[in-house]
Length: 171
Image 1 (cartoon, rainbow, N blue to C red):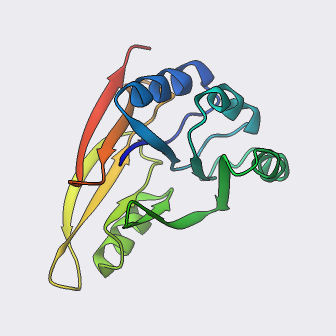
Image 2 (image 1 turned 45 degrees about the horizontal axis):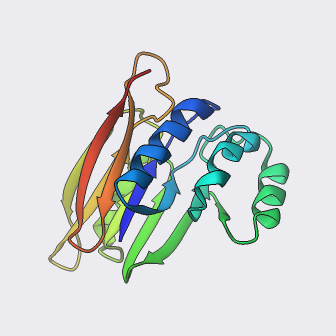
């Protein structure tokens, strides 16, 4: 199963839509958003893709009431978890949290196959040692919204072989 991992869209719906369009063209079957969506209406551009969207809020929370209502009205297409999420896709346990330092801590437990974060606006992929004498993949997709001087980035992941590629969009 391929997934699209993104974060920090900050209301940039055109870039958000472009990333998901490209990811779907590469076979993505779900979207993971690691926070800082800001306005819930930003998600409207993704409904047409009919991909499940797993979403947390980050530190730029926007209107959480409306976000919850939007998820409720999406008939299961959008799942809003709050400040973090523990989900399973294709048999892989995945943890979403906005802050990178929490992501490192969660990855070190070894309880998840993949830990994803955002906030820093810098795309990274790391393999961190964990307490089970193994390793956990840590992904920060950067900022799909291209916030500030940062590039607009997202990640395509393949859960069948646990490979991840950082992708860049033109702003």
